[in-house]
Image (cartoon, rainbow, N blue to C red; front, side):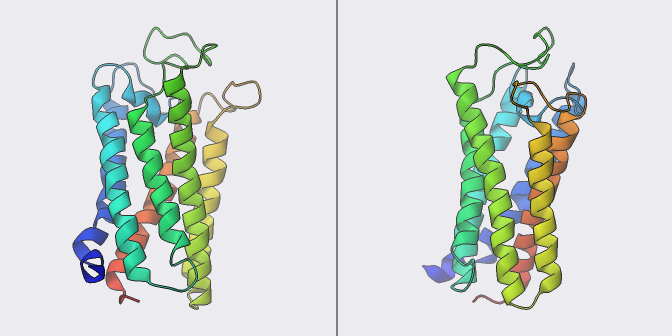
Length: 219
């Protein structure tokens, strides 16, 4: 059973998932009428006509990353981060699934006709969507830090530093793309761009981990 979990086909899920999700939100964001990728978060693509495409991307990405997390755990074996790293990725994967199952509500002027700013009546589904997003980014940040520590102990300092850098970019840009104590966005004109930078850093790191693992020997 352990040998099957180490199969390269399962580890490839860690490459496919980030690429798939990135392609979907970039194409949807560029082609959706009334949608401004610079201003609007990726989650808003789940709303309106064609919103099912982004919902499906959340769900498929989450399932693929769960598969990758299990395969990575089997491949890493013991040592620093051997369990915590894959667990963090599994948390991020679960965040994708939660975000797909519970879509956000119309916000910040999207879909067209929605009032600008934060809604005064937050739905339960929207709160659960925010929880899913928090799990997603928390998992990416902790996963990068945990596996950075593993690389540092293994003597691969360059990879460790790169993983820490990815975690910092994810954390800072995700935080900057959100709202302040008032509930309003900190940078309303570039919120979408900041979130996309965070996603690119986190998902790019995940794909790099998968490719790196595919080239390595099983522990």
